[in-house]
Length: 127
Image 1 (tube, rainbow, N blue to C red):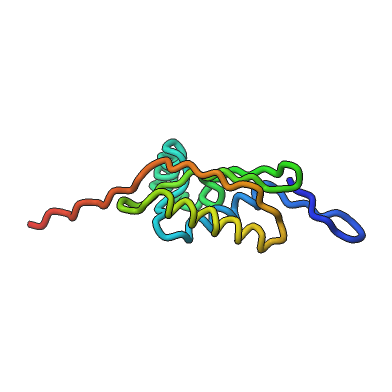
Image 2: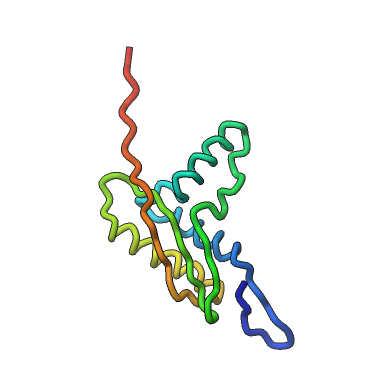
């Protein structure tokens, strides 16, 4: 949780709010196909099959904490095949930083782990 300076009281922002902002920003970057590690993506596919499509999606693949007043955000992403890792990760880092700072919060680090690459699905056979 982070405290935001305020006159006449205090304002705090929970870490899960930072995670939601970061996930929404990361998903908007071209070349990012999914978020979360292998286990999180597997669990999400099971939840999708039983009709719980949105459970956990808002913060999946992100963790955030505030250290010395600045946000440190960790992301697990899946990139699209054919994209360069530095190009996608720098775009994610910039977009997440911009989104979090738009809420008046400071970002000290956005750490990104590329967990997988999404290969293009082969076309379905035609009869």
